[in-house]
View 1 (cartoon, rainbow, N blue to C red):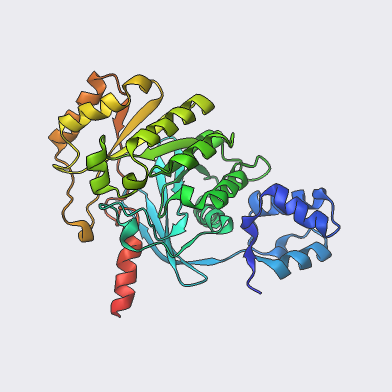
View 2: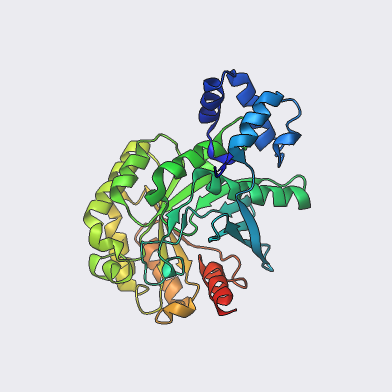
Length: 355
């Protein structure tokens, strides 16, 4: 039997699993503390837990379902990890240093089927979803790295923006959030977590109904259907009209602001015309949206797309500001270490195939 990741259980699931085997929830609290507060890396280190429970856990679960395959460190402190999963697949996880703390970007799928024409993540089609344990384990691996280097540093923020579409792996992503926000464990505040979607309208509504109070980011990248369909094939299935209805439902249900992610592509979507259209799109909800303008990291396989000129970026920004749209130009991280999401994974797979 292939063992599951011990990190894949929420506290409630762990307590129920032990209760089914005759053990009180108190024991789940002990195990949970060892996992996320003491951050042990083996069941044998859980010295206060009954031997019978240790035996049950070790027969069914394990700590390491992935190994560090490549690690790249940027001059700005960004670290990109390439992990090899048990089945040989590769995923990326990124640690970024900000003034407000340490943020980790996690991956939710092996590959991506959304097919954005400018993105490195979709160069390889999705082969499977990650389990909730594999997503949590990315956070734990980064935190253990910090524990070894800086005893007082903690992962403070999480962005679910790595390889894959998080809402296409909805249940595992939700369990992941429940694990990392649990106050008895890592206790990462829900308002310090952002989940990004390319625009699965039905899942945006479902996400609004969870009551988890984490942040939502929408990868929009174009202000009209014709352009968005050209660069993001998901727009054929979910055009802007139902997508904007889902955005309205989200902000009305949660009373939360939504971040609009907009990658600027030279001479594609970076004209003042598109900026005006973007402002029109959100004019009736401009107090509830925040536009994040993102400089493009070129991808070799998508040579038709280039980074926008600085003058175009500033003109786009100024147009939105004049129209009353809250926006900023995203600070870049790790531009010297395969910064684009999925880029390191793609290069490594090519390298290993060539050997």
